[in-house]
Image 1 (cartoon, one colour):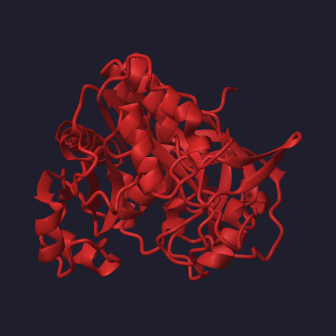
Image 2 (cartoon, rainbow, N blue to C red):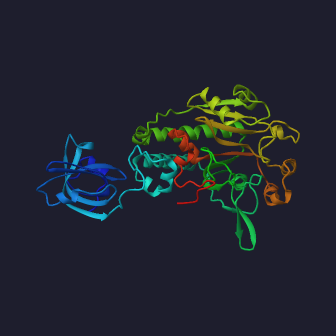
Image 3 (cartoon, one colour):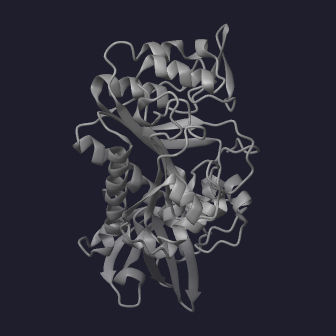
Length: 421
């Protein structure tokens, strides 16, 4: 018999069924035993009386893997309104007892230990709900830009020099040379925008920053775009549109997951503030970056919305962000940040496509010009004005799910101390 998924059995479409999954819970009431079996689509109750030939097999340990064949019947008392009267139960795999962590939906095990046993933590419905939402976000991001005719970029993850300046890179031995893990797809997506006009990617990047906070991890999945013939305002509006689309789809397709996590989402709108106004609203000083507390304060003024702070000082933004009006001595840039849920989820802006101006900015930032020769040269042959941004997938998931720690929204976190499992 072909396997039935529990979601389909609960719809009452099949009578003779075969389900396979994990034992979620067992209980006995006199001469009747109950067993809840879980697969990726749902949970169903199995019920057997003492005269059943499989009665003794109903006494299973939690997380044992079983195969159950039998008759599906309607029951008002059963979770989901359906139950299975088993004719055959097979134990596929036994879980060693006791389990090293609490795998109930409201686990009392602390996050670090749950991450040590992440493979078992994935058994929890709440953990599965997180990554169903994350899957929806990634799929809808890709769908949105695919439908708009963007080219999906596959970038190299081993690079010869820093993408964004600075020293926060992981070095690797690449044959006889020293190389680095990519800290950004920045330089490569610009090259594509100047030839194929519109590109997007979902890619891992690595930052060798010695953070030890609930906001940072050292291996990240970034959702990036880059577009020709767009300025910072136009590219911000593209971010607003895709955010609306992704969150609309999460609300539409992840109802049970949001309910399980106790999350109430609204479709956000964009709020656009010049940097100089925004930093004052948040209680900061012009010329300085926002502190985490100031980011949170600014978002609290516009709950549930995306707060764009644009036209930042040139001195704060990366070397490749275009100065206003393409002037070398401009103090204001065409760069922005986007805040959502109290934290920065994205940064971007218009890039420099003029080689001479780019060289001047590299030197002004104190970077080694020879490290960026190929990058600068890529703009010598018909480069166009272009803009882009990136969103951290894990951080966006964290904000949507309302978690305090980004590691909760990361399948296998990598931070300063953790490189397993």
